[in-house]
Image 1: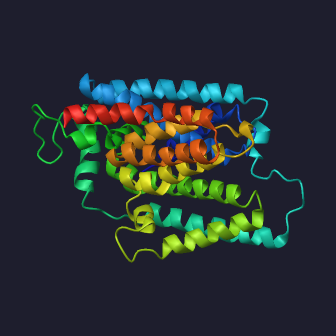
Image 2: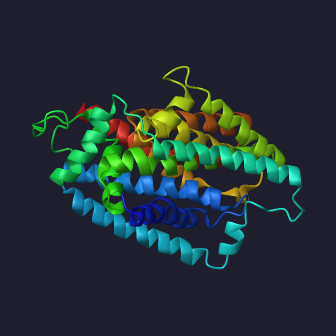
Image 3: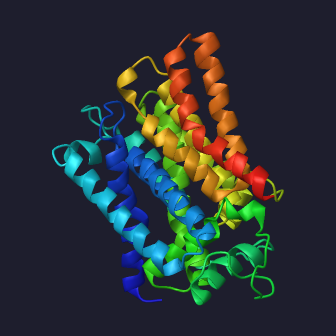
Length: 349
């Protein structure tokens, strides 16, 4: 793998998501930061992929056509984000440090430790690799899609063409196809992308979500945010006592859709719900929540139900406890993609 491939990876997995996230978050005024933009950007790109890939499966489109459409739409969305936030780019990138008070040495030291722990995890998943049994389908599906230039046309186990019924569990959650698209954009083979490049950025994305949670819980207290990240890192690093823990999914199989759902998207959905329940209505985030629901549908069939269930709990709290019925209607609209894909699943299973 050449250094140019890492540059392409930074472009498609860091720069473009950040710019797309600016478009989704440009109208917000509460806790505007590059962290929030990146999380929203990934949600937007995942949602975009879901909207393009699923119709492409039933229309029997080639992977190249879907990839080209995705590339154009993603770049247009990124350009729109940069244009909409042209005057506020400085504020966005400095949004993490909102207070103008002088940072204490203890806070800087704690943040250094937190960043070091996250960097070590990113380095470990980039250098080492773990092959999971489920990769015989997920990674094989991505590789098959590239080498046959098709989408769910061939069985990854046998190489034979699908005849008649497609695998209903995966057709509506075609995350391996999205990984194939990203691998082509970065210019590397699927195993190299899945085991070496993608996990590095997904670990970073997971900790950005945890930072947003810390910022929300401790109202921007930098010391408490750093302690929260350190505690979370330690718990996740030493959680490989079972194959079902969050740390195992995060460190050993984060490239799988269900791991992204558990480690990134569901915590992000919960964060957006808490953010939207705040008294400051200018906090915003409804477009991001809508995209997050589509993103959950992309990564796993379980996400179709679990993410909608989480938003349903939010609707109950808003409607019954807080009497914000206007927000209940907006939340229902955000769950509309989950309902659509659930109905389609019932017809194709």
